[in-house]
Image (cartoon, rainbow, N blue to C red; front, side, top):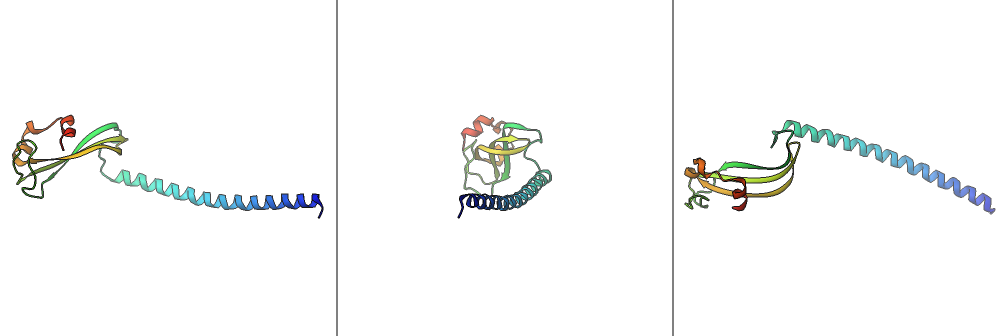
Length: 135
């Protein structure tokens, strides 16, 4: 076979394979783009409909305290008065890095239990630094 003919056939086969690969990549790219756009729209819809943890324009490191009643009676001791907790409050503190109201990175967290007397006492409110040290 002539080398020139072999070179022409090789170039034609290469162009044909490149054309097919281009078509496959374009169709995969279109599907990926549509899937990405749908995921983006679903994520924005989820963020808009949920109650935000912080204000929508909050950016930076923030701490929040989540409060709920103690469910296990007597299994814990109060952080302030060291008494067994029969009726009280469990406070979970969360220090996070926030971007536009959405917590992105959990920096630190912990939990404290207070009896009902200390939970209602204004002096039992600890500063963020003290909360972070206790666990």
